[in-house]
Image (cartoon, rainbow, N blue to C red; front, side, top):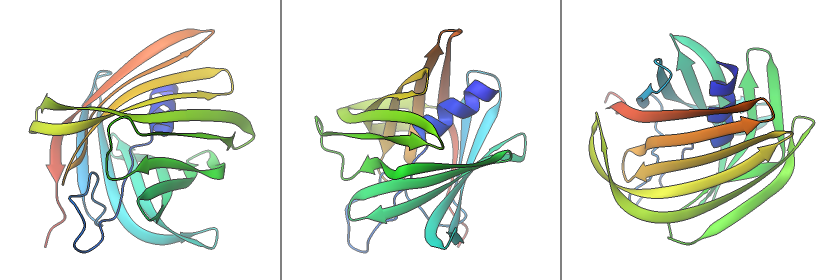
Length: 201
C-alpha cells in the first residue's frame, strides 16, 4: 500500500480550474466532482475535488484521494495561467512540502511540449520531467475517450517513478500506468477510470 500511495503521490492526479470561455478543461475542478478508478492492486481509488481552502495561510484547491472510504492523501494546488502547481501533500502521518512548488500540468496540451522540476519533497531531493506525448483513443469502463497522453519520469531520493497518464477534455485523467522502482525491486500500478461523477447541480 505504501508504494501505491507513493506512486499516486508522485504522479499526482492533477486538476485545473477552467476559466470562463476557455477551451475544454482536461481536469475540471468543481467541488463535489469525483473520479473512481479501478486499480491493478484490486482496490478502487476515489479522487474527490473538495473545493478551495486555506492551508498554511495560502489559498489553494484541494484534491482528496480515498481508499476503502478513508482519506489517504490531500493535495494543495494553485493555478497560475495555464500552469497548475502543487504546494503540499498532506498524509495521515504528516505533510510533505514541495520546494519550490512543482508544476504538475501545463495546459492546453501541446504534443512535444515538456517541462521539468528540481527541488525537495519534504527533506528529500527530487526531480521530475514531464512531456505531452501524443493523442490517442483510450477505452475504459467509463467509456471511450480521445485523450492526450502525458509522460512523467521522476526520482525522489532512491526511488524512481515512470508514469503514463491520459487526460480527456471535460473529464480529466482517464488512465494511469505507473512503475515505481528502487533497489528493493519495482511495482507497476494501473488505474482505469470506472466512473466519473460530475457535481450535483
